[in-house]
Amino acid sequence: MTDSPTILPGQRLRARGAGSNATGRYEATSQQAFDDGWDIPEEERLVATEVRNERPRSALTFNRSPDVPFDRSINIYRGCEHGCIYCFARPTHAYLNLSPGLDFETRLIARPGIAEVLEQELRRPAYKVAPVAIGTNTDPYQPLERERGIMRQVLQVLSDFRHPLWVTTRGTTVERDIDLIAGMAAQHLAVAAVSVTTLDEDLARKMEPRAPSPKRRLQMIRRLSEAGIPVRIQVSPLIPGLTDHELEAVMEAGRDAGAGAANCIPLRLPLEVAGLFRDWLEATVPGRAAHVMGRVRELHGGRDYDPEWGKRMRGEGLWAELIHRRAEVARKRLGLNETHPDLRCDLFAPPPKPGDQLTLF
Image 1: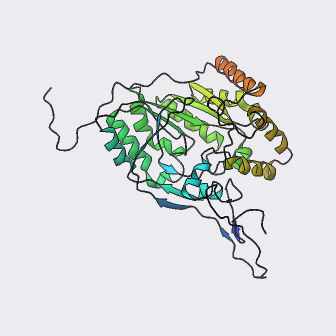
Image 2: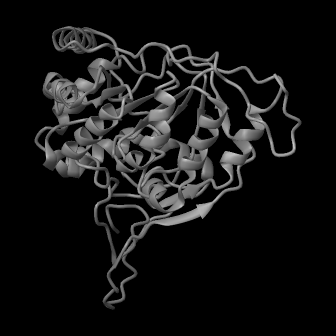
Image 3: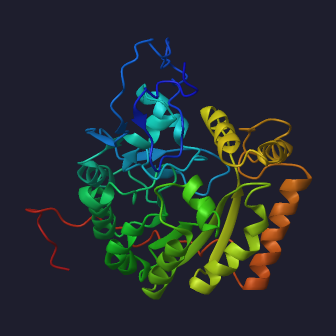
């Protein structure tokens, strides 16, 4: 029997975050790869990325979470090929009867047509405008976007409607859309956030196997900033005992690249992510695994994760307070804000549709 559920003999992983494909929490049965006893060589093959399409029935997802600064978001894709082992969005794949492990980064769902659905929703007479966040769950600029261009279509709708936008990414394809985002930023309708977890290239490659390198992400910040787009560097997740010592250095690198704001969020390990991350630590940095998890539990009241509002993204106790105090001091020293100024909502205006009667005045 193998150590990795449902990773079959002969399957080979390359540049993947998760080393297992454990069954999601809603499944009644589980699968386990095992040796059938036949001494027959298995054909070695890479685990490839598969993409399916979903016809979206809605574009905007609303939330009432009291500890996030937005109440609506758009998910362009389900799953993310970047493969970041710590990604808190992994458990959402269980809703699709897929594994939050390897399935999350290899069995992706694209949502073509979501731009048209979004336009319909924004035209509803009862719609009340507020900034929409994109990239808060899975990255809209993951590698798949280069060929699909779905995010570009959504951006065009938001630009046409003059709708305020927060976009968070670590994908270089965002540079393709600088023209649209910069045009919105000039009207105080858009800000961008780029996530940089570590400056250690080797650690980043292991932890975020298909995401751009830290150096490349800093270059993204520079290019976005030079185009007039307000950029925030997100030092998140900050992993205690592994990357927390880099907090100030990452913020400074972001400032030097052109970021005007910075924040950090300690590591979150909801549901299946906790087991996946523990396994990754044991396989990648075995000598530090116990120390890292000990610090994580100190942040979350003795547990791998505390989902309580106000605590889940901040933590509690001495180490949580120390992290946030360090971030506050670093921002002040570097001249960085915690957030950007509020975006404008008063410019929102649905554009005329083909065939509409235009006014004379």
